[in-house]
Length: 87
Image 1 (cartoon, rainbow, N blue to C red):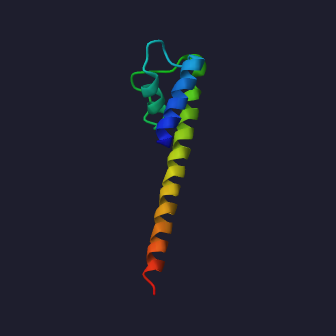
Image 2 (cartoon, rainbow, N blue to C red; image 1 turned 90 degrees about the horizontal axis):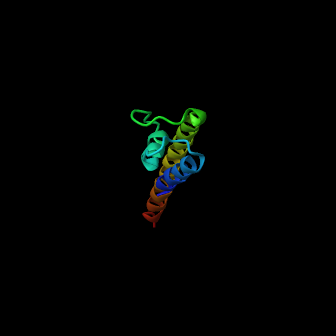
Image 3 (cartoon, helix red, strand yellow; image 1 turned 30 degrees about the horizontal axis):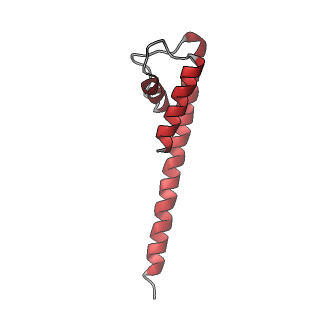
């Protein structure tokens, strides 16, 4: 859900700044940037073209962060499970 919220926030930023071409799907455009998929059919307005790489850097960082959080939660769960088996 955190990633969905991030994509929505980026799409709102694109809408406020007018960074995407008129008539484009802002959620799709934000998701393409956020996941570092790259441009195919929607290209940003030239004035805001550096906003796409900034979105991609944010997406990479947040995917790494969420992976670390999931790993930590699993590690703690395994630790609790292993300690509960002892008498």
